[in-house]
Length: 255
Image 1: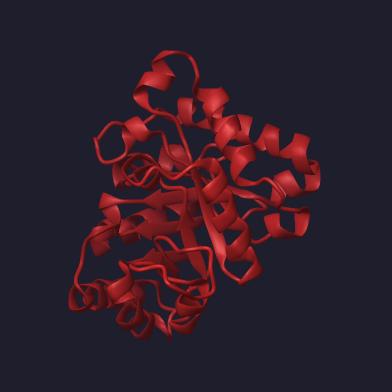
Image 2 (image 1 turned 30 degrees about the vertical axis):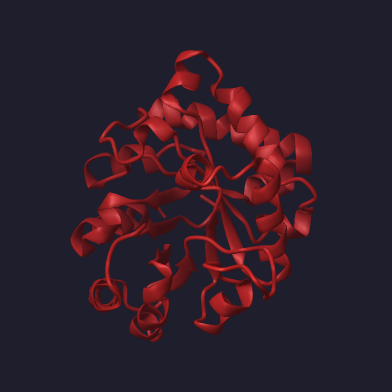
């Protein structure tokens, strides 16, 4: 495939700085300088610096789990793009379903973050996806379209070259449930069609759309073999170096 696979680990609120450094070192020792697959680790804010140091001589990239769309100021508890770049972060996860649900983040606010990230030389991983209720009501494609176009409002074609879309069916996150490869491909294909309508064929074909719903070593081969699935945003399996590296190997075999 012409698009390079990306496997990104979202550690969520797990791993102390010391534990994160250890996990990152284990992954880095296996991945080394092999860049066949782009590999990103996204620890909690407090672990970013130590993880950054642990991976600096490897091909791993560092990502953050969130940011606030301001350069600085009286925003207690928030982190700016400049702070993330200072520890050599390259990516940032935005619009994750947990941010939408627990912190009531709207498409408009997520869009603000996406644009501010791009302006500040960070690559957003924009998360979109439906709840179980929305899927059962037949609303999946409507929800995905609203979140995708809302999150990308005002982002031009050049911005799209530095952005990744993550489809994460909310009902499959951390539940052990997974969309079948065919179900996932249907939505990924629809996302690429929406990107073609908005940006044209060339941009749509270059944009990576990854899957974020309980991908693990036992189902990765079948998911990654789908024509419009370009990698994974990995939760639970990213907290174990062997499981995470098995996922990287699955992508590497298909590259």
